[in-house]
Length: 184
Image (cartoon, one colour):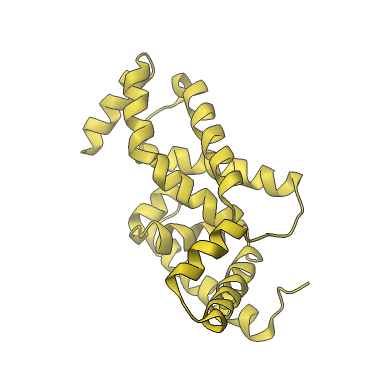
């Protein structure tokens, strides 16, 4: 879908719920994925995804196309909701048992499974101790596989600023992992 086609669809969505449904289908997986990596569990990611699209639908008439993809507006809504979620809750991440069971089916050696889970959790814990904009950058780059220019549109920064932030983020993440400065 071209930028013009998307802009027309967004305008239609202000009046036509079916048009909003098309936008929902196009972006729900990306928004859910972003929220899952920010929260660390499926239940909260599902809840926040629903809230993101509810808020978007409720505020469609206030949306103004400014030359950036509609997804940038959705990511901003999701970002604000997850920031509020963190502010409202200060709890430790728990790996649900069903995820552990699914992972165990892929690896037969229990020691490998434990080591892989520990490495993943260590990395996620370090990432969650980075500032919110750096977390968002890593998720958009590695999970959503967005190019720097598109990340810049979502985050409201230039492509050069994204490259610089990415470089500084990787250095900070490496230092956190070396020093384990993120552990309680």
